[in-house]
Image (cartoon, rainbow, N blue to C red; front, side):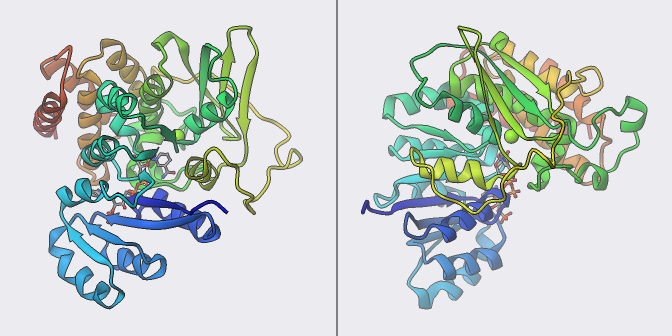
Length: 384
Ligand code: NDP
Ligand code: MG
């Protein structure tokens, strides 16, 4: 039998992280946990570490270090703290694959560090590719590192491409559920509160991506993610709203043939595919029934009401540091919305204003991204 795949999970206490551990728990003969990291949820990190017995854990919030250290001392698990430690721990020789499941720009540094040390990547942190897609994909190519998509749409495209990697893509269709406010108008959106936005019809996810899904920014970020993952031009990427979230995305080849990947909306499936690639592992995930879904429907996205999707296309077409500005402005806007400091529609205003205000850099390097992120957060904060 092959040796077990040793996995580092960055962001193990989040929605993707905990579901990845469910997959690993069910497949202990295939996977072993090498590293776990969390932001500040020390209690859950400790519980996970005791169950999965990793080599090391990192808690980003340094004030929680004594608690984690004390709890894991008897278990002979190395404990580190701070953001820098996450970027260092991914270099461990014993790691085969790093699952990047930290949310937002905070995931960039550790993803780059993992690629630099030649680790294969299961990529959930889409913001990494939005902020620095050119740099990250070039680095991955140089280091011979594969980026296996975890995002369900990108996993779908990747699954459709299996056996077809030499065939050019004509275009892809990324499906979008439309979120909880599909079909609503601006007057309605003016009044919505976070409690409504946090109720996603099909997926149970972390707070940030759930708000992004309601505002269609998530689909905008995914368009940019797809551009870099699959080397596409803007005109090769289309978004189609599919409220049932059964068809996870579609590839159209140059002969006009289309391939789609389907299944019930369950993130464990794309997570398992990314961790197990190239093998499909037998699972007991609930199966799709045509009888329960007599109709699968598709419609145009409303980019006039949900302006974030149009803004993302705009930033992608502009290139340079514009997607980095888009991302940072959106992170500030979402956080403010979650704290009831701005309204739902104001989030797009903040993003648009930042795209107009923050200085454009056509060929940014890593430090330009760091500076752009910082400057955009400053500009966006002035609008709260
Ligand atoms: P969650 O908010 O549920 O989890 C985020 C994880 O990152 C937690 O472990 C959190 O720790 C940790 N974290 C947060 N901030 C920091 C920080 N500054 N430094 C270090 N660690 C930090 O997010 P999700 O799991 O929903 O999403 C993770 C990523 O996956 C996102 O980029 C998202 O876009 C992407 N994704 C998620 C999907 C989903 O279904 N959830 C689907 C497709 C993509 P703590 O718990 O301690 O705060
Ligand atoms: Mg997705």
